[in-house]
Amino acid sequence: MLAAVRSATPRVGYGIDHVQPFVFGSTAIAHNGWIGGWGGPITTELLGRIGPDLIPDLRALNDSRVLALLIAGRRVDGRTLAEAVSQTIDDVTDLVVDLDESASLTVVAAERGHIVARRAAVGVASNGIWVDPVSCRLASEPLDGADWIELSDGDLAEIDPDRVSIGGDHANVR
Image (cartoon, rainbow, N blue to C red; front, side):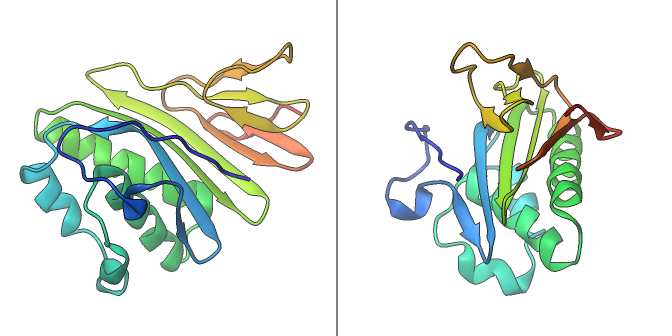
């Protein structure tokens, strides 16, 4: 299960098409954060990177939906969920740096019992992601007395029903 709570973001519309997680086929994607300069050149550049087959899914214009569409496009191109999330965050981070903006990019994607999470930021702190390797859970805050591990910026977590992997080398921690 993937659930997300959204607060009001300046210059971003309201309505069901703005509510996460965004679902594309069997993939659900949620973004906790923001992309600086939204509505300006960075928006134009990111929109230009969305494949024509996914344009109909751009029912609402916000940074989280565009980020999700970029990830979905990489899945359509055959990348694994982890590759799609990581490559998208890396590309957006590079663009944010090039345009002298800031961003908080904390993304969770789920597909058929497999969950991928990554956090990254430019110029600000990223929003947290915590993993419980014993019960294979993921949260934006540690929930109970479990031994939660906070992901560091740049870390990637992959969670399956029976294992958790954290880090660039995907070392198995359970």
